[in-house]
Amino acid sequence: MIEYQHTLKSSVSVQGTGLHTGQYGTITFVPAPPNHGIKFKRIDLPGHPIVEALVENVVDTSRGTTLHKNGATIYTMEHALAALTGLGIDNVLIELDVEEIPILDGSSRQFVDAFEQVGYIAQDTEREYLIIDKEIRFVDKEKGSEMIITPCDAYKIDVKIDYGTEVLNIQFAELHNITDFKKEISPCRTFVFLHELEFLLKNNLVKGGDLSNAIVFVNRKVSQEELDRLAELFHKPKVKVKDEGILNNLDLHFDNEPARHKLLDVMGDLTLIGKPLKGHITAIRPGHYANTELAKLIKQQIKNQ
Ligand SMILES: [Zn+2]
Image (cartoon, protein in one colour):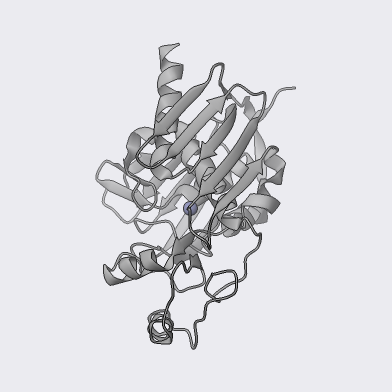
């Protein structure tokens, strides 16, 4: 059976604030012709520079995945890319009037909703998969990450995380059928530890966080005074730690929501290969660095064939 490339039926926009820059912006997903792939266009900059969603353009992976080309930077694009891959949308031009994709609720859900609202259509060109024919592995001993992709006739991902703390220990997540993405993976939100959050807030690194778009794990004792200060920072009347060791800003969608979110990030980052994949990924303690390094190795291997 021939599988065709897909694009959106019409343009659709989402609006929101960037997690790291705090900038409020509008992101418009525009239908694109076959073999166009996914590209970003900074319509707020002179000459409207284009940045292809390709791993060659990755310049930083410290707090999210950042692309840069032609004087244009695109921050935190991974959740939007995961939504495109999850729904099988191959070709789209993403216009933005800021340098960061909005964090929205910290997951891919609102992107999925936007794409489904306008719908997507098959184009008259066959989809070309990148087929993995032998194992490729990336190991980061320092971080304890290991990324493996093995041959498989479908796109499958298994994730294991292990933060070694009482509140967030070993968790697993899997996606063995891409049609499960929308329900099982797309609503899963990003997470942070309270001590990271405090560091980020103090150093002015998280600006769009309003305590509704991240699961916050608390892995040490916090005084009421600290909680009151957090409540103030986040403009909430009251903040407390729930039994599961998370702040009461939200309820978990799944017990293993953090592992599922890491899977979502793997999908988003591997989209930067530029072609849909057929292969089985096993990701142990994945992160944006490990994910994008695997993407580079996969591209390299293919080039060498
Ligand atoms: Zn993420």
